[in-house]
Image (tube, rainbow, N blue to C red; front, side, top):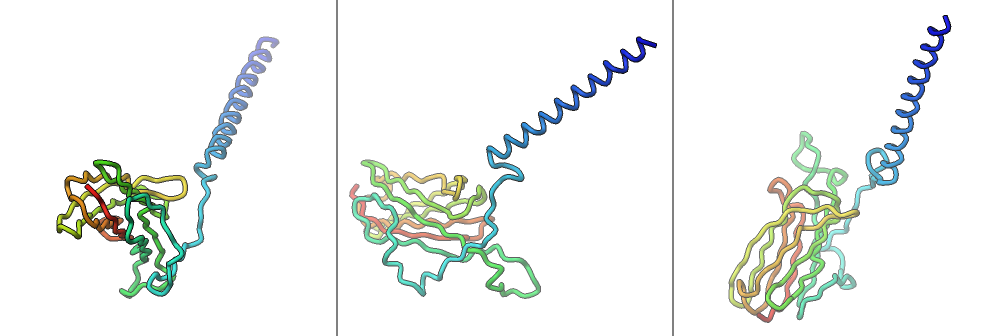
Length: 196
């Protein structure tokens, strides 16, 4: 009789040890998820961002960070996002459209190469950035594309570097079009003077 009770106690102790281990592991996983802000602890911003129509406002007080030699135009365009809910009507209601802002944050002239950096006011890895640079002085055009990289609070085009010898000196019109599934979600342009 003693050996049966002893075996039951050992079995209960093993089950209790396994249960405690599982509870501690689950607690550790939840604590780790909370510390890393992932899963159910990921902060979400459910309020839609609204951006005023740039054609209706005066944006003279906004000055993006530009480190080029001679910036002649600093423009950041805000466009309506084409992610609208499909309904029986082809016209989207104002509540169904979200704003996505794309900004060229810097055009940097580094000896042989011009680097272009952007900011997309949305955390995503979807889509591509289409770059078009036109030298307005000599008419040459350069095109490139890059993926999108998520940052903690926004996203960016993975970066562009344009060798000066491809376009030469002059006024460069830099345009970036952010697209998802070949649909434009935002466009930004900036003119800079480049000395090759």
